[in-house]
Image (cartoon, rainbow, N blue to C red):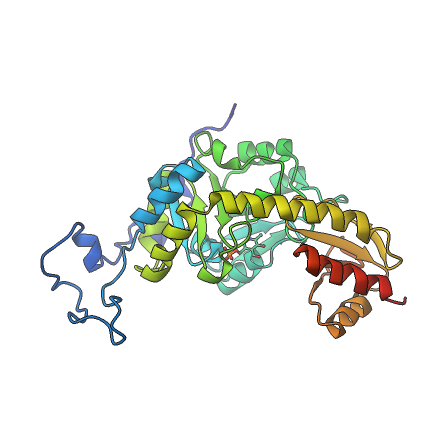
Amino acid sequence: MSKRKKLDINTLLRENIKNIKPYASARDEFTGVAQVYLDANENPYGSIDGSMNNRYPDPYQTNLKQIISPIKNIPVNQIFLGNGSDEAIELLFKAFCTPGKDKTIISSPTYGMYQVCAETNDIQIIDIKLKEGFELDVDAILDIQTKETKILWVCTPNNPSGNAFFTSSIYKLLDNFNGIVVLDEAYIDFSDEPSWTTNLQYYDNLVVLQTFSKAWGLANIRLGMMFASEEIIKIINKIKMPYNINGLVQDYAINAIKNGEAKKNEYVLNILAERKRLETELIKLACVEKVFKSDANFLLVKTTAPKEIYSYLISKSIVTRERSKLHLCEGGIRITVGTPLENDILLKSLAEYKN
Ligand SMILES: Cc1ncc(COP(=O)(O)O)c(C=O)c1O
């Protein structure tokens, strides 16, 4: 059970965000079904292609959130939907970190967008690198925190190492970090570990990110989720662009998700079986020194010659991700788990590689 005291989110918010009046869109001011809509300067006739895309969409995606809510067991008012979870990352910086003043903590090697968004927002990055075995250096993170370190980013399972972090490490951070702790669970569907969303009720400083881009197979529609306290979601809603999820995506996602959970679970089982097979087969190859344990839909593989092997695979029209320059990733190539056929092609090509 949490030792956490109640956190006053206001003390973390950017000064200019505290009293900001959000843009009130036409569809904010009137909800329900009207006889005549003359409020939003839309084209009343319809769309040029005969479709009915002439009206602005629901700015808060209520119908879609009502589908997601029971699947994730999280109330609608604790859900934010973004144009990919990347949008949520950007908005968290915008809400909590004052450019040129505040700082953020990451633990490399990790997902690159935390750094990109921090840099574009002029937020100083403190990198408390992962320890050997890709584990969080919890004590170093807690030692270095100050009033300015507003957000801590923890990607679990982590990209590119693939491992989920120790539960005890994350509890210690949630209990003792003074700012927002963002747990990025983009790969949670592939992990044996449960989601941290069940802890939202205990930790006011917890934000969980998930996405429809991975297990659900909907990367093309760009739909990410942020789960947090109602208070944090209200703040993010205040500063987001009014119609950040377009109506086509909202309708598409409602249908796909409503009927898609069984298929998603089937995909996950297939991917887990193929991950296991790849793990077993890759380590037998002469050019592979180590396959790191993965809780995600990819494997970090230590190879004998990462640059050469990456280029060789490209020459065979197989694209992987060369990660060897990253901290603790010497020799590293990140390989997404493909279909059985794709994995066969990869394994056959790697078996033919001459060191
Ligand atoms: C850890 C992590 N978080 C977030 C994302 C972005 O997800 P989305 O497609 O929802 O923007 C990715 C994409 O690869 C990722 O690896």
